[in-house]
Image (cartoon, rainbow, N blue to C red; front, side):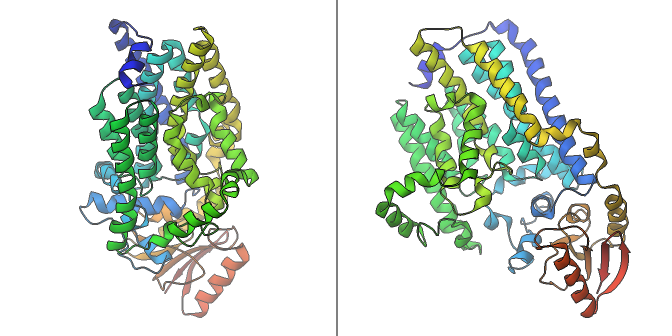
Length: 482
C-alpha cells in the first residue's frame, strides 16, 4: 500500500477544527516536556546525574557552541586516547551541533536536559496527526498521551542525555509525512537519522524494507542502499579516518571476530541465531515490553519492519546493557511501534469488517501506559523523596565542588562531574589516575566504574601516597589537590 492509498483510506477531519486541536496538542507536548525536564533537572541539582553520559554530551555541545571541534576529554581520558578525542568517533552524532544555540542562552548541562525534553515531546504532534488520519481525533489524543507516558521515553529522560533524543521526532516526521504524501520532509527526516548515530543506517534500511513490502519499490531500494552506505561510510571510513577504533562498535564476538566471521557463524548455526534474541530472560522481557504498549497490534503492521534492524542489533549482541529495559535504547524505536500499532489496528478493523474498535483499543493502550508508569522513571514525579534526594550528600557535594577553581582539569567521581563541567575540564575518576591537579572523590557510596566503595577508599589512599593533599573531607566526599 502506497502513501497515497493510505491517505485516501484514512479518517479526515474538517480543516476548521484543526486550529483548536493544534493548541491542545501543543499544550500536551509542553506539559510532557515540562515533566521530562523536571526529572532531569532534579537529578542534576541533587547530584544524581552522571559524568557518563551527561558530561560527555555537555563537552561536545559546549565545543560546538564555541565553534570548536567536539572534543570529549572525559571519554578520551577513559580510553587513554587524549584530551582531543572527538565525539564523532566515539559515536557519529554530528547532529549534536544543532543544540549549540541552547548553550548561547545557558552554558551548562541543564540546557541539554531541557533540549532533550523538548525533542522527545516534539514527536507528539506528528504522532497525533498520524493517528488522527488513520483512526480519528479521540484515538489520536489517547495514543499521544500513551506515548508521553511510555516507559522507553521515561527511561531515556531519566538517564542523563543521549543522541536518542533526536530519534522519536525524526522517525515521527518520517512516518507521518510519508503517510501524508509529503515526501520531501519525510526523506529529509530520514537523512537526519544518519547524523544521529553510526548505526542509524540500519533504521533507514528498515524504512526501505517497509517501502518495499508496501509496494513503493523504487524508493524502498534507494533507502535500503542509502542506509547500508551510511553504516559503511561512518563505521568503515569516517570514524577510522578521524582516529576512532571500529572494534569499539563490534558486539558480536560470540558470532565471529568481525562481520565476515559473524556471517559464517550465522550460516553454520542458523537455528541458533534465530533463537538468540530469546536466549536470555532480559531479552524476552524487553521484547515483550516493546510490543505490549500497543497490545501486540504493532506486529500486524509492516511499519514494524523499520524497527526490526535496530532491535536485532541489540538482541543479537553480547552486551547485556543493550538488552535491558532500564536504559535509553528502547527509545530509538518507541514511535515506530506506536505508529505500527495504530496501523495494525486499522488493518485488523478492515480484516474484521468493523470500524468501532479504535476508541476501545486506544483507551486500552493508554491504560497500559498508565499501569507501566509505577515500574519506570516517571513514577518519581509523584514521590516527595525524589525531590529531596540524599540531603547529607547534597550539602557536602556542593561544598566540595566549590573548592575546585574554574578552568582546571579535575577527575571527578561519576555523580560530581555534571556539577563541574560548566567551568572545568572533567575527567572521570577511576582506579587509574590521570594526574589531574584536582580530584573529587566519594569514599562511602559506590560510584561507577569502581567495584565497591572499598575500592574508592583504596584509590584515595593511593593518591595521597603519590603526593596529593586533602583539602576537603566531609560525609565521605573528599577533594584532593596535587
